[in-house]
Image (cartoon, rainbow, N blue to C red; front, side, top):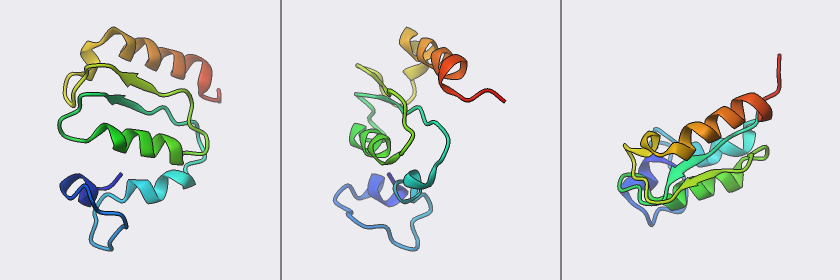
Length: 94
């Protein structure tokens, strides 16, 4: 959701010095968005992925990778399968 919210999980608003206020920008994204997040992410809590997904107006079906952490998500077979599906069928063609 934001850099500050990672360091201080009880933070409820965005401060001007927060370098990554993604939660405030998500609602402005006009392209399809695929959120992928590991359920056992030890760096960025799973709730951040869920919050971003809920804020994106054009979010497609997310991929919650059961058991995946922060740096191993690409090792799960459903990761590449879901990326391929998103690129092939859910992105508008030019």
